[in-house]
Length: 382
Ligand code: CMP
Image (cartoon, rainbow, N blue to C red; front, top):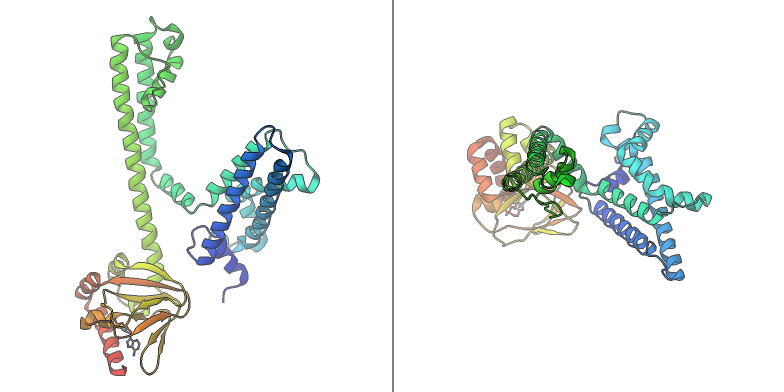
């Protein structure tokens, strides 16, 4: 049984794909954008007094909504998977001191402080609020954790590239200093001074405010520019591969967890499970969705990881629930679908495409036999 606090915790989780959680994220994003828009308008000097009152009121309302969200997050903190080992008070304390808790608190402090105690707002109130709202936005976007993980996973390779970047930077500044100090002493007179030119050139920004005059200086500049392109390409490559690996790893773990709910897969061994997991795709269906239509060609079968479906047979329907499967008969018999199947609740299904079905059946005969046995039983019933 899930408590109301656990349900709310799921809605607040930026990684959850439930419809309620998605609606919450949309509302939160809208509020942040309204907050940012209003603070931008508020920062324009000499705006109409009434407009200013209206946008400040809107900022206050956004602040209050975030204060309410903060209270909810604090209440739900004991359900965070990483904090379940703590008692509720300690879990809330832990969350309040975590980066996410501090960001959420900072985003509400100026507005709630001003509303509660009539606190004097800082002169750069609008700028501060925009920065805090942006911080909150980045902390709660579903991709933020992903980016954090990718950087953490690739930290060693990134460090090597950054060290290379540093070496090229200092070498470039030193060589440019040697080549150019006589011609342009105010810009290349010391290595620290030449660093500005080196960084602008190495990052291929090229403001053009500092340009080498000597032939040697220009040759160095050419090498630095080419090295800059190389370093940036290396960084982009490392991050892109890191992202794709992390996304694959996450999908694998998520599907592994869902596969564990299907009894058919429980006794087939680790290697077979890994093969199955690599071929399944998770799909969400809302209640009342037609998953399979009678007479349509069958190109996949479905395992129910969560929820219930109705198999509309004549004269009676059959209900299939979590752990069961359907859609196998069209694949085995190479015939059109034998019944309509409609979801009764929101469902998470694991979908196995026809080519993968036959490949798996060939590799794991026990699995194929179990599916065939169930299909034979259903044919007998139908
Ligand atoms: P398929 O024919 O591909 O599409 C409709 C599905 O309904 C079918 O595969 C079976 O998976 C399922 N089905 C058919 N008859 C029964 C039954 N008697 N009990 C449970 N499921 C069934």
